[in-house]
Structure formats: structure tokens, C-alpha cells
Image 1 (tube, rainbow, N blue to C red):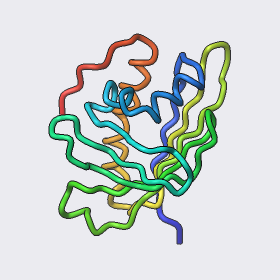
Image 2: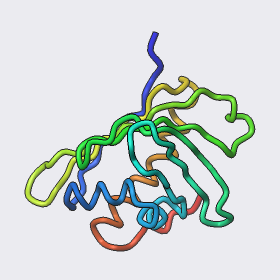
Image 3: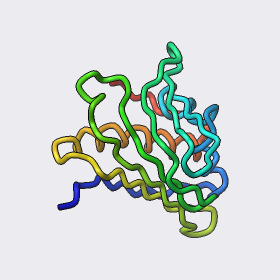
Length: 147
């Protein structure tokens, strides 16, 4: 039996290239991912690392599965900072970017290979990140979300 997935679709007024940069450039991710910086050389099989800007600690890790610029990006995703999740198997995150009109792209994020009891938690985690991404790309500012 396959594991459940968290699926999020949004439409963003931007270009595929700018969205791709936002997903893969560590300096860019810190702007909308609440200070989290992504690092990778983006070759299939290479590591992906996420760092907290507050103390530069490793928060998540993974491995690049697909890198098809600027259409599809996929990597495994493993929590590295919550003690009760460190033994979990890695999940998978896939970003699919498609043109959706003049100056608009459709972004679909699928986070799968997760346990059923974690779907809502991932949905609650991805929603503010993706809302912040959309807002930043469209307005140049971020949301004032409090956790």
C-alpha cells in the first residue's frame, strides 16, 4: 500500500526561471522560507541541506532525485532537528512548474512517502512557506506570519 501525500497547487505571477531560482538558490530561500537556507550543487544524487539562519544548524537533509530546470525538481527530505523524527525514513518533495498564462506559472508541490499521521503537519508546514514564496515573488515583500 502506498503512503499518503500532501499536494499543494498555487498560481504565481512570475516566470518559471525566477520561481526555479527561488526554489534552488540558498540566498533566495532565506527570504521566504523563514530564514531557512538550502544548499546543493543540484546534480542528481547530490546532497541537499537546509540550514537555520539563526544558528546555521542543519535542520533537514536529502538527496536530489530530479533536476529538470525549470520544470521539475525533486529530492528526498529528512528531518534532522526533531529528536522524535530523526529515525523516520526520508520522504520525497517534488516541485512541478508549468506556464499558466501570460506571466503566470502553476506550481504544484507534492510531498509524499510520508506517514498518514504526518500529512496534516506537513500541510501546516508547507502552507505558510508557499504563501510566503508567492507573496514575495509577486510583491517583493514577505508575510508577517507568526508561529
